[in-house]
Every structure is written in structure tokens, then in C-alpha cells.
Length: 213
Length: 213
Image 1 (cartoon, each protein chain N blue to C red):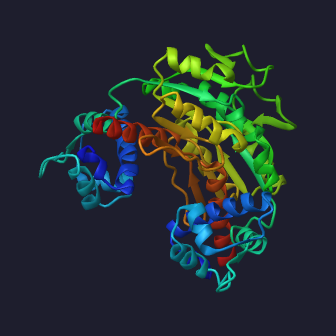
Image 2 (image 1 turned 60 degrees about the horizontal axis):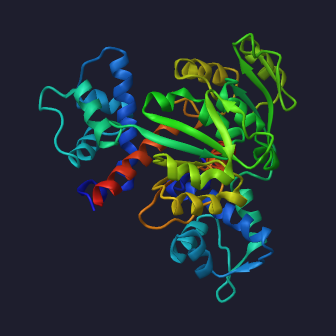
């Protein structure tokens, strides 16, 4: 197991946030930032930021702060953003099509090779230049193409079966948008986006604030 | 501040998960579950589940476990799912349209009243039966309709301005899909869905697992 693997998930989830803030600073042509300013910007304490970054070697210098571009590039490398990822999307419904349509991911190196669906009305259509293929050809496609990430956008009834097929075909990373959890072997990574859970968290918080008034 | 407001965000984020698992059990006509089985199902320890639920009063009985429907209903109430929420979506691009199209949220009581966009090509179109309106009419619409939740699906350049307008018009809850953070007054709740951060977490984990081989 690589050294960085022992870093806690809480730290890991803050890294993309730091990266995003640094991107925004670069867009504003800000080349250097103190840990204090970075703290104010991100909402994390300066010592938290230092500790997080120390997991990956030292960045920043006493009295100077951080070189924004250097730190952005270093974080990009840590996050694995210094390479290209080939993705496929299974389930060409609302969310699947929205992700295929979103060019922001492509700009960051995540290229969608194909969508898959079982609906004959969708098969053969194109989202941007990306074809919707018959899900029956999923294994064949993965065998013939390098696929790094499988995005599951199916209804929950099909998510586990889809995950099983992706894993069996050799896909090692799954981005799961289906509203349930999927089981995969230990050497496969899964990142879930459970939109309903996010919405229910919001309704909970809204309820608490209303009760307070 | 209501009592339940002091519950930590970590606990709060587990509640929708419990709710989801209980829904799934009910769909399978399972009426009763031991804390041990619930632990196996959710991946949380039985003592963690008990502690979490104890924040909201006791559920379950020694030697019997939990009545699935009762606990589902109780959790639904805690999450504020025993009422209807009226939502509007600002930004009728890929994600905005996908959310408007997704009927699952409506089934849980979240009704989309309208979408808003500034693109003249989109204004007047309908997603299902939901009209895309001119974003210039946002304040007028909120004044004339009960709006509980504003969903921000704009590019990041417009997210803060959109949040300011929603808040000024009286909206107290924001579901933010724009890839940056927004600032709101203390009496407004925000729940972020940062898809890029989720994707970068996946690429980080994939990188770590690959290095391990």
C-alpha cells in the first residue's frame, strides 16, 4: 500500500477543496498566499492546512507562505490529475446525460468514451460526440478500450449488477450516482454521490433552523 | 436553537443513510430488524447506530430490535420529510435540467415549481411540466410563491450573485451545485454538491491503489 494511502479520508476530502481554491487564486493572478489568508479563504485553520499538506511533504516557507502555482501543481499531482482518465457512463438517463454533457470534467482530464443504456430509443443517439451504446456491448467495449472509471447512473435496481459487470471486465474505479450502495472487491475504489442523502440533510437543517425561530 | 441542532454533522449525515436502508427493507417487506443486522447492512457498528438514534429519543427494544416501519417514519420526521418542500432551480443547464427531470425527489415531497435561466433560447421551454423562466423574474416569482429551497445550478461566476438574490428574496435553504462555495447569512442553510471534488477524490484513491500494485 502506497504511503499516501494511510492518510485519513477526512484529509483526502479536503485536498480537492484546497486545489479548487488555488485554481481560483491563479485565475485571479494571485501568485503567493500566506497560510493565514489561505485559512480565511478556505475556512480551515492554518494549522489544519499545514498538517494536511505535511502528509505529502512540506510546502510553503516560513515568512513567505505558499507559491500558489507550485502548490496547485503539487496538489494536482497528489490527486492524480497529472494524467488522463478514460471513463464510461452506464445509464444514459438525466444524470448520465448531464455528466456526459458537462465539459468541465473533460478540461480536468476526464474523457467520456461512451454511454451505455438498455433503452432501444436511446441507443445510437449522441450526447455531444459521445455515442449511447447498447449495454449488452459493455464487456466488449471495455475489452477493446482502456477504461479507467465506470460511472454508474442507472436506477438502483441495476446498480449492483452494473458494478459487478464493470469490475469483472477490469474497471478499478467506480463513480456511483445510483441511490444505493454497491459492493465491490477490495482492490476497486468507489466514490458515491448520493443526491437524495444530500437533499435530506438540507431538509433536516432547514427544519432545525425553522424550529429555532 | 432547537435541541436536535446540537447534533454533529457526522451524525446528521448518517441519518439519511439509515432512512434509505430502512426504505429498502420495507420494500422487501421486512418488518423487524435487529441492531446487529442493521449494523451488517449499513456498515456502521450497532453501538454507533444506537448512539446516533439516542440523540433523538430511544428507538428499538432490547431483545426485539427495531420495528422497521416505525423507525423509518420516525427518521422521516426527524429529517423533515413529513411535509412538502417547494423548490426552484436557477440555471437550466445540464445539471439543472437533470434535477428537474428526476422524479425521485418529487416522490419524497420536493416539488420543483420553476427553473430560471438567462439564456433566451431556454426561456419558455418546459422540462416535464416545469417552465424555464427568465431569471430577471426570480424575485417576483419568490414574492408570489412559497419557495422553501433554491437550487443553484449556475456556472460558478453566477453562484454568489444567485445566492444573494435568493437570500434577499427570503429563501432560507440553498442546494448548491455550482463548483464553488457561496456565502450566506447565518440563518440560511446551504448544502453543497461539489461533483468535481468527488471525482478528484476518486482519482486520488485510484492513484493510491495503482501505486500499491
